[in-house]
Image (cartoon, rainbow, N blue to C red; front, side, top):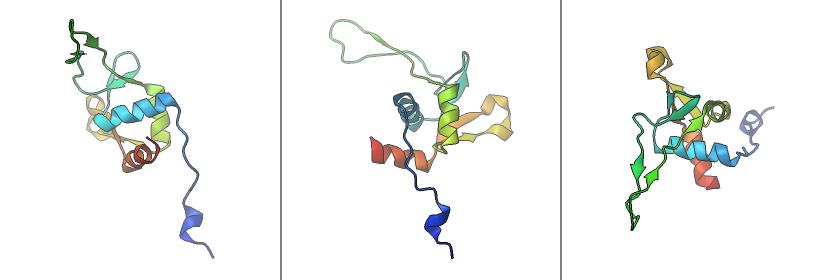
Length: 106
C-alpha cells in the first residue's frame, strides 16, 4: 500500500548563491532573453541610486545566465511561458514552488 508521501520527493533543494540571485530576480518580474546568453526583465535600463550624496551612480542591470535559468527550470522553480506564441514572446516566470523556497530559505 502506497501513501501520498511515497509519491512526493521530499528531498530539500540546495541552491548556489548564483541560483538564489537568479530566483530573486525572477521574483521581481518575468525574465526575457537578451543578447549574450543573458535573461533579464523586459525593457531593463540602467538606473541611478537615489541615495547618493555626491553624484548619481549608475546601478547595473541585473541578469541571470541561460545556464542558471535552465537549472532553476529543472528544479521546477521557474516555468517557461509563451513558447507557443513565438520566439519573441518567450519568457520565464517564477512558480509557486520558487516563491515558497525563497520564503523558507531567505
